[in-house]
Length: 337
Image (cartoon, rainbow, N blue to C red; front, side):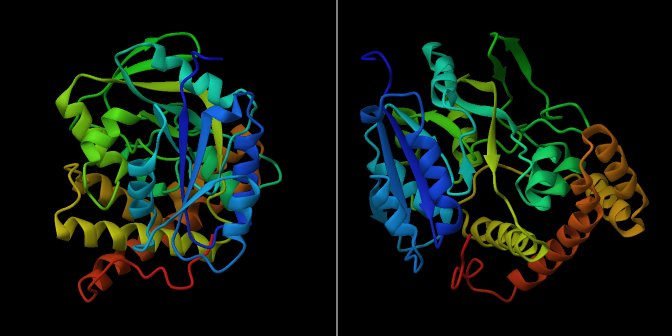
C-alpha cells in the first residue's frame, strides 16, 4: 500500500449534478486506498446539487471564476498534491473497481508520461447518443474522417490513424508519437505525472489537454501508455445536447486560438474536410457506415451517425461564422450537464 502513488482526481463542474454522483461513486468504489485519492471539484458557480454531491463524496471544492472546463482543470492541477493527476470529467464513470490500479501500472516505467484508456465503455442503459459515441470511439464524427481519434473505433478496428510506434507491455501499450502528429489525447480519464504537468502549466489560466501533452513531448521523448481498459463517457442524452457541445467545441477553439493560448499546431487537411462535407450532404456514405456499425455491434444507435454528421457540419460552419461576431467563448450561462 505504501508504494502506491497518491492520485489527485481533478474534475471541473458546472451544474453537473445529473452525472456527477455516478462519477464520484465510481471513484470511491475503487479497490485503491481512499486516503491516497484526493478528489478535487473545481466548480463554475453551479446552481443545482453539484456541490451537495461533492461534499457527500468528501471532495475538496475549489472555485472556477472563468467557468470553462479548461480553466477548471488549471485551477485543480495547481492545487493538486498527488504524484499523479487524473483528469476525470464529471460525465466519466470508472467501469471497474480495479480501474485505478490498472491505470497506474505503466508509471512504474520512468519513460511513461501519461496513461489513458484505450476505449470507451458502452453500457446498455445509456442513451443512444452516448452508446453511439462509445462505439465510434470519439464524440466528434468529423474526427473519424480526419483519423486523429484516440479510442478504439468499431468501424475501423483501430484506436487511432495517426502514426506511432508501439510496444505491447501486456495490459498496456507503450506508445511513441511525433509531437506534431498527435491524436486528440489528454481527456476523459487520462493520468499524467503531476510534477511534469504542473511545471509545463505554470501560471496559465487554462489547461488544454492536447496542447500540454504536445509541449511535454517537445521537451522529452516521453511514452504515452494506452491501457487496455475502458471508461464510460456520458456524452449526450439527445440531439440538442449533442449540438450544443459541438458548437461549444468550435466556438471555444476559434476564440482561444485567436488569443494565441492554443499551442498545438492543429490543422485539418482540406481534402479530408471536403470528404466529410460531401459524405454528410449526400448521406449515402454515412448511412453505409451506420449500417456497417449496426451489423458489427447489433446496436441501432449507429443510425444516429448520419444525423450526428449533419449536426456537426452545421454547428461547425455556424460556429466559425458566429465566432467572428463574438468577443468571447460560448457563454456558459445556464449550462448544465
